[in-house]
Image 1: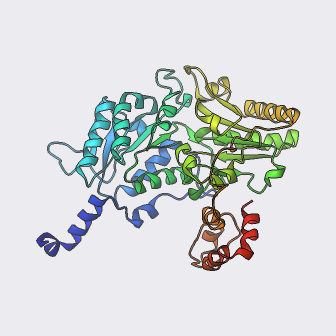
Image 2: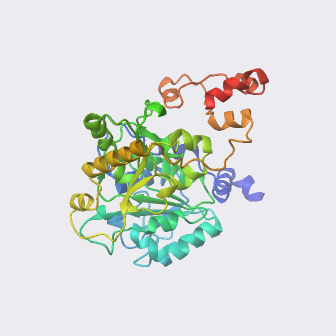
Image 3: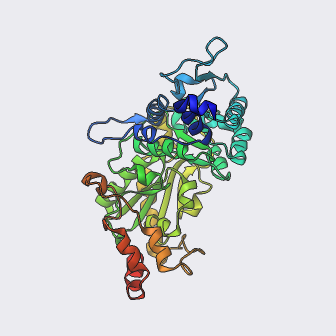
Length: 425
C-alpha cells in the first residue's frame, strides 16, 4: 500500500500489533531468577517486575487497576495516565468498578492492536466474572493481574480473602489461571499470557513474600506442573507426592525435608502453577509428574474442589477465612509445615496399611492406540546445540542427542520399537 511504501517500519509495527505477534526481545526481557543473588519477594512484586520489563518494548500493552494501583503494583513507569489531555498515556485509572474495567479491556482487545491488562484483588474478580467469561468466549487474550491471592492477605478478613473464586475460573473453558510460586513461575505466566493471543490469562499473586525456590524453572512452569524437588528419586522409591501452588510450595518443600529426616519418607514435591495447562499436556507428561498410584496430597490455601483429579487428599479452605496476621491464619487453617508434615505422614501410613493406592491417572488416553513415533514425539524436547552447556543442562530428561533426526529415523524402524517402548515405560 501507499502507507507501507512511505512508512515501512511503522507499517510493519502496525501489522505486528494487529496480528498479535510478540517480539522475541520482549520475551527475553522477562526477569530470570538467580537463586544465589536474588532475594525473596511477594508474588505481586514478581508481577511488577515482569510488567515493567515488557511494557517498554511492547507499546500495545495498556491497562490499569480498579483503584488499587499501590497494592496491585501495576503502574507503568514507561507511560503516563490515559486522560483527556494526555491521550498518549497507557495507564488507566478504572476506579472501583471491576466489571466495567474488564469490559473496557474486552473492548480494547476487540478493537485490535492493543493487549490490555487490568488488576484488582483476586477476590474481587467475582465482580468482574461476567466480563472475564466473555474474554474466554470471545478469545480475547486479556491479562488479569489479581493480587492478594489467599487468606495470606491478613487483617482485611473474609470479605477480601478468596476461597472459591479460583476454582470458578479454572473450571471456565479457554482461560489459563496461574498461581506462581516465585520469579521463574511468574515469568512463565507472563510468557504464556503474551504468547496466547486468543486465551485470557489470570495471574494470582501473593501479598506477602514467597520463599526462594532453588529448582524452579520457566520451562517446567509453562507445562502447568513439574517436579520441583525429588526428581532424582525413582518413582518406585517415592513414598509420597506433595502438590503445591503459590505460597504453599515453600512449606511443602520444608515438609518433604522433615518427612525424610523424621520418618524416612521419601517425597517428591510438585509445583502446579496452572492446572489448566497441565491438564492439556499429554497423558505421558502428566504421568511423568504424577503417576497416579503414589499417595498424593495437594496443598493450596483456596477451595479444595478440582484437586481431586490430581490428589488422594487435600489441604485447603473449606470455609471462609478470618481476620488476623497472615502467619497466624496459615497456621490456624492448616497450612503450617507441621500440619503438612503430619497429614502427609498420615496419608502415607493409610495407603501402606490399605495395600493399594487408587490410580488417579488410570483413565482413557492415547496409551492404547498411539504409535511408537507418537509416543516418542510426546516425550521428546528438541533443542538447538548452541554450545551453551548451562542452557542445555536445563532440558529434562537429561538423556539427549544433538541429532534428533537419528532418533526420528530409528523410531520408524520395527527392530528399534522395543527400545522406544522401554524408554517411554
